[in-house]
Image 1 (cartoon, rainbow, N blue to C red):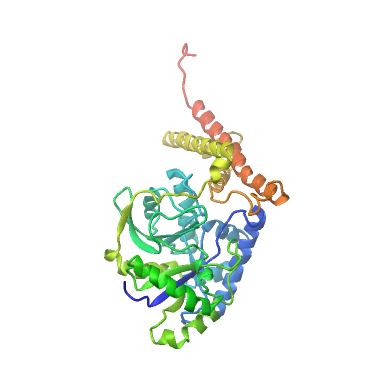
Image 2: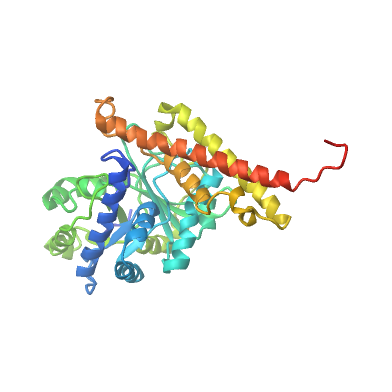
Length: 414
């Protein structure tokens, strides 16, 4: 194993739609986190030191909602910071579960195109955390979306990873193409190891253990990527003291003498550039990144089954609309009283996708199943499936009705 020269720290908030707070509160918290990250990134904007603050947007959902309400000036600042590699936007809509089918993956990655075309974001990487794995076809869908690297930061509770971690590898997709992938430490691993919290613990306890582990698994790279979050762990703000910690760490004699690795606050794109330099040295794996942890769907089997039916109805509606378009009369051109408003399809998919997102239950739901927070969060979660049902029914009815109007019946065939 080569000696580790540098620890790349990717700093972000872990997105749980619920769990720590009720869902409407979560959305507003993430709006505030983005604003705080902008402020911290601006403070270090002129610094090229490895300690300079950088922030990674873990999922696009909160960013899309922030963009709806942010001022033009604030959006412009965000765009500039992204272009300067001070903030990076990654490609997954949420931390997803294997409940997603191919179409859901495609729909969930549609914002990538929008964000690139509208704001000029690069979006070359994707990341997921908490869940342990994803369906194999995701590799092809990410490649189709122009994603070059995908990292996972699985939760070790109630689950495991299918291969050793940390490990960078080439994930061979069903198509035969290869996606760079990284099976990393848990998303809050950096803080657990002492980064941003306790230099002595990192130096004396954790780094020797990590080094022995990397040596045991024959880790092939001279750098290692470790994600870190604020100590609140889930739905958590930026750590304003992280640059100060990293600067202090890098000033140690042991770091300057090469006895300890330097730390760099970085973004996924920088990490993947380094991994790509060693691409041919990486192992290749193919098949599902099997999930052992996401058992939430079976705890609400009725809504989960209903969500699958909603997905089927939306696909049926879109198939009929495609037939109408081929005939020269798409549903969008139908009389206003015969079609839903233009945003309804998007709302149906949004609710469907966020029901299949990985957060099931409040953090107190097992110990206090009847607590107000538990009950409120479940109502918000279940409503996503119910709203997707209502909207998908309307979408399907409109498409079927409009197609039926185009069917000609000869006299005597009625």
